[in-house]
Amino acid sequence: MIATTVHSGNVIVVVAVFLASTVEMVEALTIVLAVGITRGWRSALEGAVVALAALGALVVALGPALVHYVPLSVLRLVVGGLLLVFGLQWLRKAVLRAAGLKAKHDEDAIFAEQVAELAGSEGAAGRDATAFVVAFKGVFLEGLEVVVIVITLGTTSHNLGLATASAAAAVVLVGIVGLVVHRQLSAVPENALKMGVGLMLVSFGTFWSGEGVGVHWPGSDLAIPVLVAAYGTVAWLLIRAVRPARVDTPVELGTAVPIVEADRG
Image (tube, rainbow, N blue to C red):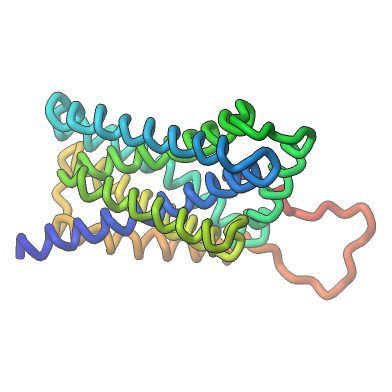
């Protein structure tokens, strides 16, 4: 029974880290592709590689320190709070999009915006400082959220190596697909992924926050899928509750349409 519980927990950690990393790396890849097309591939790829190396160093440097010097109960409480913040943010946006109250996250629009911002000047034949910095910033900022998730999920589950490998697999997969497609990955169902990742992060946050304050969950890690299902049900009910009712009468001129402009989150 214990072995089954541990195995189930490992699978959930792998899936959560992989999905979160995939979402963020799709956004980072969009920026890198836009920079590479408009300013030159050499500097754009160098900036992306340096950013990935810096993010990897953060995981290696901070992960062991958290494991050895921070009490597990405190770590779980802090981690649970962080995951709840991340997860609720993602879940809120996913619910609003599914309900039609927020515009879909459009990688095509983001790609076009990045190209327009960078198309003012041509990159040099050698290294382009602007391309390097923009690519580095895009990959590093998007990857920071992945680093937080990798460290928190990896340390609290005592599987930092597994969480890191899962994130690395997502980075490699997105990179390979990017090389094949050679432009933004608009076909990836990112909005659906955000809903799934949001549910998983909120569930993990609830689980570890509870453990941090002494809650003993029935079935240990097996309680996490139950939390995912419970939050998924709540999200579905919220979508149905806030979705605007369809009307047959035409909308009068000047009537406000309850759609929020798309953002990058």
